[in-house]
Length: 182
Image (tube, rainbow, N blue to C red):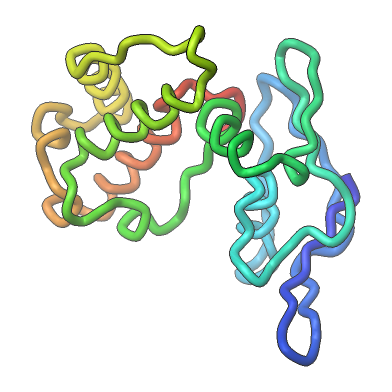
């Protein structure tokens, strides 16, 4: 709602987004269209409160209406609550798949580590024992969902995959924790 985002430089501020206001209805596909450099990625990053420094939201609020009826201003979440929120409520498929993947860790372990980390952010009474077999089943399903050979890709390192395959891995990654908004 009425979001403005600026990048503070030494001698001036660069306004990247100026009073943007829109809703993304549940169950609908919403497209944000604009020419290169128009602020689409900056707006999308604001939805996750992960705007690159020195950028920041200087006006407005980013409201997330959860299925349970609660409302969260994403821009006001502290780091712990943000880590819980990201991937589980909202996830993003970044444009540069190569820079989103760790080059020295195979694909399975990148998915598995993310699952483990997010399980640890949950309150102790809500945590589940995450076995490698359960994780492998979920990861296999997601990779097959995006038309990849799951067994081959899980054991591969990013440099062993084509650009299109890496992009599909990132789409599967965005679905990993069953977010409500992608």
